[in-house]
Length: 201
Image (tube, rainbow, N blue to C red; front, side):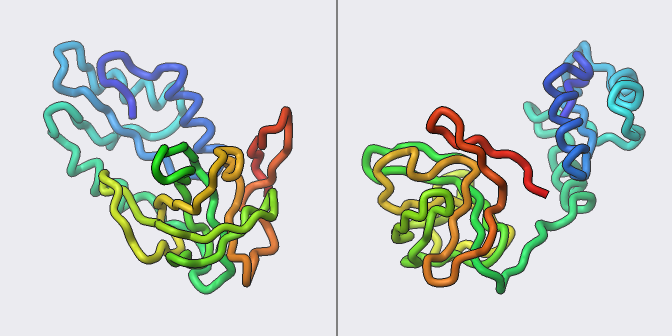
């Protein structure tokens, strides 16, 4: 997503290159076309020159006014491949983020890479070997909605009565205690008592 007035900036460039290095599909989107300083043609050329991707059919939108937002969604559905994974395989759930809630304990944002996670399942944190009960889980719509299961390819939240944020390290993998996965989603290096995610290929 590139500001149609300011053009390609350093953070956009870094994120785009990271996505391309990971072989992800990149969909160019020109935002803020409603601003007087917007110059979509110039910015599309800038994307092609600096980033090196075709931007002739870049989606033009204004998140503020809603113009073109439906086009962005349709383009994402059309051009971005669905998540890969084995719905019948052992559970591999990547911890994307974790935060502490005073009433629930640690809440983890997870992506189900393989398998299915159901409410009541015993899950194991692969880096520590600790097991917890999946007390609550669900999705954001954007509000938090409870569900009974999260399936392969879905992103949702999980509460397991973990008391310490370090009990659910970002980048770690959750699996089922009764049928554990052999590998983590990402390799983890431990440094200064924190886990650092690194790509494992």
